[in-house]
Image 1 (cartoon, one colour):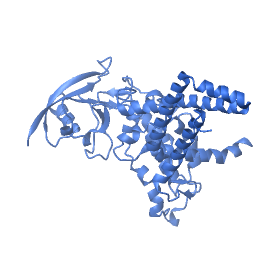
Image 2 (cartoon, one colour):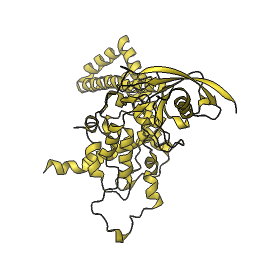
Image 3 (cartoon, chains in turn red, green):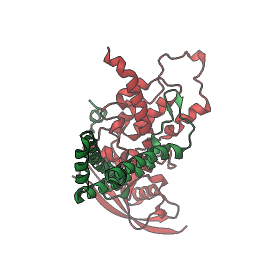
Image 4 (cartoon, one colour):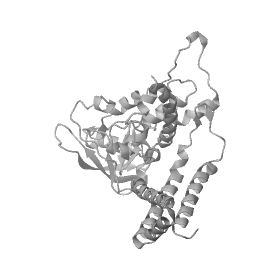
Length: 246
Length: 142
């Protein structure tokens, strides 16, 4: 198979020695069918074993290998080297603190996801003996698109709102909240409302739409957020009179 | 304490970097920033509209004075700029705004209208309203 020598500029940050992140350049012999992740693995295996990056499934499912390639947030396992010309610049996801090299701190992201309670909430749980909660294909179709999120955090890296307001709950978390709010089996709207209606909730989004542009699973978080604004407003209208008189 | 603050990194980390090309280096961010900036010019348009209504409420003299003021060159230029930003807002909103249509509102499913009608009707009405208003303010329509 034909080999092509490709130059990679990789952002390095070694907390024990670097004050700030710096770029390092590597030349790699790439095969025609390589993705950027293959090249990073080749660098780690053969050139510089100290390079740190996350990856797992290599097939666009686990969402671990999200990075900036030439400035755009992508899954590196799905970014073919042959599609880039000249030097390829690889950086960690923007809007996240950098732990080491291409590895970013995701704790805040995970906490935001957890904060919207992304699980089915029932006011009264059915007994197991009563069987499962049934759902028609039409009911499934209402939220299926929003359930395709793989938590790769590319949408957070692309979001200009998060660059200015780091506490914004963010696209993936809101899309997930909306997914459960649309689920016919769920009764947790009111519980999620507290987060979605907060200062850092849905209204912090100013609809740049960039999250949907970079989403590798076509979840369209921007759509979820705009729809969530409407449902949040209706929930507010439903509960405000009760709050005002109690 | 917010989720973000509660999970402050335990080891020394490098500061988060802003998205590449934000705010003006990448065309999609640039479009977004211009879209956000339209609010300033549309607010100016609203001030003009309030002024027009105020003049209307205070008789013919006030209305004529308002029209004369609006016909001054710098106000004409400002009106054109406001119109351009408003049109940009409308077209971008038509592009991304279709996403606002909710799948369902409470128990009520979205009506099975084709998307072009959902998008074109309010946007078309909005543009028509502004064009008529501008024509009236410019004295083209009585």
